[in-house]
Amino acid sequence: HLNYNPGRIAANSDAFLNTRKSIVAEFTFKGEPVFVVVNHFNSKISDTSHFSIMQPTVRNTEVKRAKLANIVNNFISRIEKYSPSANIAVVGDFNAYVNEAPMKVLESDNLYNLIRTLPRNQWYTTNHNGNSQSLDDIFVNSVLKSKLKTFQNPQVNSDYMGRLSEHDPVISVFEV
Image 1 (cartoon, rainbow, N blue to C red):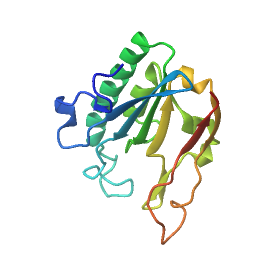
Image 2: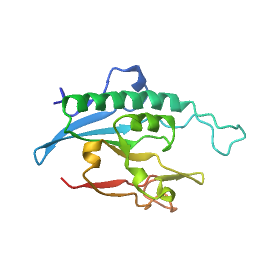
Image 3: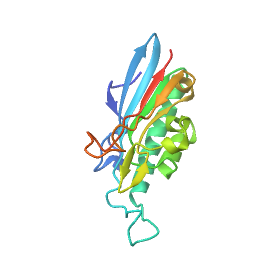
Image 4: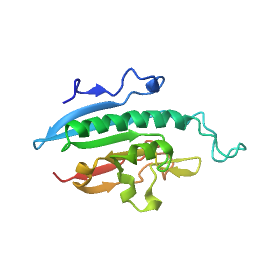
């Protein structure tokens, strides 16, 4: 069980300076433990644009996101060590592309990115300067992945002008 529920992950870590803190909450559903880690990693605001005069693109912010991903991944490993049957979801706006280093860190040991269940041409949740990209994701551990019923990424915002948000929702349903 968590010491604080909900609680922060590595609240005192320097990696979280000047960025949002990851939060974890523990629930029980039908007698099974469920852990949800909510994230909003640092933005790409200081990176160069895909279309800028500076090529190749400079993505300095990726280093910090990789550190955050390592912290989250290590935390998930500890949950799985003490509660192997736990259902774990890691969700949020990761501000990272599917194949970017921080995302590979999250997927490296124990998490699966549900965006990969969709056809590749649907792997986006936002459109910035004409570049469709997936920044919002749901990762699950193998226990929860085995219960996946459906995953959807409805493009209700990113493809349209006058939208409610620049990000699309990601939705998953599990059968427990």
